[in-house]
Amino acid sequence: MRAQTRILSVLLILLAAALSAPAFAQLPDFVPLVEKNTPAVVNITARKTGAGGSADDPSQINPEDMPELFRRFFGPGMPDPHRGMTPERISGGSGFVISADGYLLTNHHVVDGADEITVRLKDRSEYTAKLVGSDPQSDVALLKIDATGLPTVTLGNSDSLKPGQWVLAIGSPLGLEYSVAAGIVSAVGRSNQFDNTQRYVPFIQTDVAINRGNSGGPLINLAGEVVGINSQILSTSGGSIGLSFSIPINLVKSVTEQLRTKGRVSRGVLGVGIQNVTRDVAETFKLPRIGGAAVSNVQPDSAAEKAGVKAGDIILSYNGTEIGDSSELPPLVGATAPGTRARITVFRDGKTLELPVVVGELEEGEASPARAEAPAAASRSALGLVVRAPTAEEREAIGEQGGVVVERVEGAAARRAGLQPGDVVLMVGRTRVASVAEFEAAVKGIPADQTALLLVRRGEGSSFIGVRPEPKGR
Image 1 (cartoon, rainbow, N blue to C red):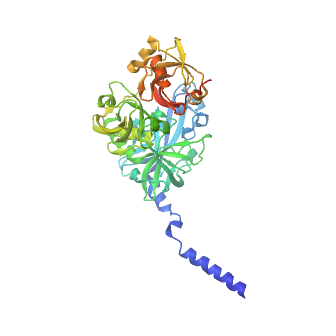
Image 2 (image 1 turned 60 degrees about the horizontal axis):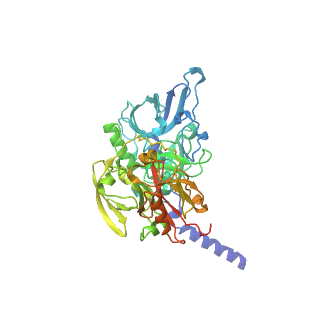
């Protein structure tokens, strides 16, 4: 009898606990969100004709064969064998209607280079879409179909998203139309470290299971609002592994307005090369905290140069917004209209400076200068680097920055740091080096237990690299 009483008591306690469980323990009901938004989601088919195809044309590539981890996800597509020497490539994606008179959004990579774009609605009606404008940098495309009275989505505020919030995606993964998947926001403001062409997009990272064919579909919050456009996955196989990336809808709103009114997108630019502030950078420049964007180079005649920004400066804030990571700066600048007056806060020589700047305009398709090959008298430094003066041809490519060229990398620490022959060392700490003698003098003054911070130019980019001096006797 006592045993039965004990069991009954335990059951009553469990029942009471279940009835008093907090509301957050209950999973959200996604059905109303799906029913509200599905009518405005569309399936997109992009057809492109051409002989052979190009390795640089993503519509001609099977995403399974892409070597990079980031994959933009197309739907199933293959050449039509009945087209002879001009095969037709068909790729699929998703999209959503943003206005009742026929404007809709998808990804740039879904429709890039297409000769014909077909949009199919939930009621199976089909339309041939006109490409109003497309922006590779943000991977956003604006389409228009000849229709009225269409169901539309509601655009939300992506700036209010926080990690841990529920979101869902609607699209056509692998051609399976109107599939729904749910998950949570894993991170916000994520940069694409594998594709520099999208440095102006602060991606929303989620664990929503999306695959090829989800491209261009909406990411929806619990209020039923679209907060992003699904764009990429991080995968080694081409399938979903719970790392998905969406374009924030607030960025999309700005891009869409420019595409609709001008057919192109203008972006602000400072004209600086930046990198994260590491412990070595913070220690060398005596920065009180690790954070901000370290300026590794300043382009001639750029907005930054005119404002007085110098290599070695640490950009702490832009227009009052604190920079915690260097990837946070490009989206802020890119969203600023060219010609706008802005202010940047930099840390230099132990002081904080406010610099006014007139934001420039980003120019696409800038060519990289060729690197010259020419040996010269070289000298090995305490860092295990054999350096030499640049040739006349190399000096022309480097410009007025000066520097010494790495002829060979002989030290283990320098090899581990990633230095390579052909690199140009521009600075040691905050000291500019224009000759081998200046480089050796700067290196000689570095204590053996302290990391030497080198500003190194490789190709068109520059970055700070930390190297410890080699122990004497080696």
